[in-house]
Amino acid sequence: MIDKTDIYGLLAESMIDSYAGVYCVNSETGEFRCFSSDPGFNSLHIDREGTDFYSSLSRDGERVVIREDLHFFTEDVLRERVEKYVKSGELPHICFRLNIGGKPVYHTLRMIRKISDDSEYFLIGVLNVDREVRYTQEADKIRNEREIYSHIAESLAGNYDTLYYVDTESGKYFEFTAAESYKALHVPVMGQDFFAETRENVVRYVCPEDREFAEGWYYRENMMAALSSKRSFSYRYRLQIGNEKVYYRFTVIQAEDEKHIIVCVKNIADEVAAEQEKLDTRMKNITYNQIAESLASNYDVIYYIDLLNNSYSQYISNPIYGSLEIKDEGSSFFEESKANARKIIHPHDIDRLLDALEKDHLITQLENKKQYSIEYRMVIDGHQQYTRLTAMWSSDRMHMIIGVENVDEEVRRETEQLHALDEANEMARRDSLTGIKNKTAYTELERSVQNNIENGIDYLPFALVVCDLNDLKLVNDSEGHRAGDDYICSASKLICETFAHSPVFRIGGDEFAVFIRGGDYPRRDELFTKLHEDVEKNRASGSGPVIAAGMAVYDRETDKSMSDVFERADNMMYTDKRRLKETATA
Image 1 (cartoon, helix red, strand yellow):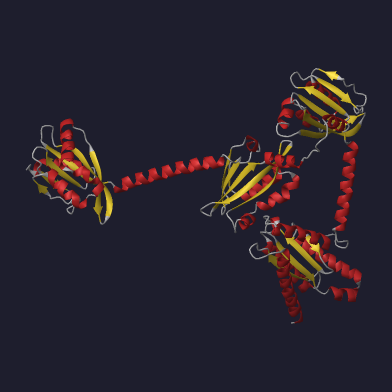
Image 2 (cartoon, helix red, strand yellow):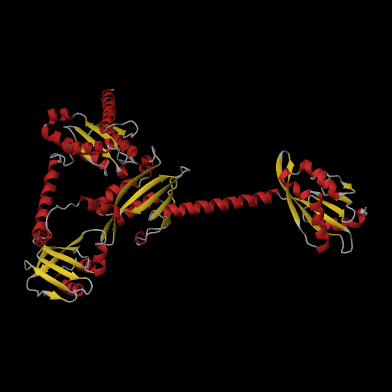
């Protein structure tokens, strides 16, 4: 064997690389000796020294090496690698697993170097690399899983215009947008409070008539309440994109970690248009001539346009253009119509009409529907006149027919009727004394809510407050009915000021009900407490209304009707009424 003193210097240099142990092997005879800075080292369980390194390693390796890795230690394979190393000077290494304490632990058997160029001795180091190997494996696994999840997410996201990934606790969110129309709204791609920021965007982008409905969904408590009994739900409303009101469907999905939600946004304008088209019916068994005559009688002017060269013919039944000269035929309908529009169209409507009179725009509008209409105002001899333009295909699809009709009387009559109807409806649903909503309005609300509950339609979370005015009879008897009316009005004012964003109803002589929703709903307990505090102040001062009140929250799991909620609130009100009387006499 080689003298230890001859190789200590080389071993010290090798141990710098943190090897647990180093074997010095004679490549010709197989003699070996193990050196280690750790006296207890013997990771391969072979002898500290011996005469045949390969056979000892192959024999003893079967006791501690994981079976799948034993092939590295067969005598022939290992000897072949070592001889290749001795001849070429390459530094190969073998990674294998040892059974330590019943668990596989990764090690590497690495050829360090020959002792000298002309020596038959070389060094083999054993290094524990379990942490590094497992870290690499875990990183590869995570990377592969992320790639799979990314592919799945991209495929699913392709079905929507926009996705929001929202942390329900903090409100932080990330937005992925694919649709150009939605990008045009310039909604931030990430933010700190999805619910508050979306409520602000509702004011900016949602059609006015849909805003109250849309805003109600973007309170954290409301959205989570809707998810309490199922994994997802949907609702829809219209966004104002340019001059168009476009329907979008919003699907809210509970993420698997139950800490996030995914809000999926999809343009469903085509679906809504298809639904509308199904409603359009036409009488059968009528000749084309009869159809043409019937249609023609509805318009004051009809244009028949050749789409190949834009030439047109004009047919007039009523002179709606005043003194402006209109040709019977022309060579360029779209250019001439836009030139005439600039002279007679109301300034507030001109840009919208010019956009509508673009040839490509009209063709696009008629791709999936039978006709396209736009209303605008003309200014004729200084007077405004409401007009409707309707475009449709001819039967050969090579021509377009545009009808123009005076709808001034129709629009004004409808406006007056709607105004009168709104006033009548409003008066019928208002309490004449207090000006708030009355019993009729409450009954209609109850019927609407009940219909949604019975049909399984998602309804926003709500609560009911039932109030009863104390001592009204005493005021009437002692001070007169005028004072009693003032007492009722002061109670109504206090309730309305407390629940400023919820409808208040007078449902009896001294009874009121509050339908809490929207922004008041998350604050319902705070507002209800404030009402009690104000009542107690009135009692202490001896002035102002004293009101008994009870509140109940709609529970979709147990409540079968809105009356169930009312009954609970009414019972709580009577409990509060007894308390007020008992404390007053105490």
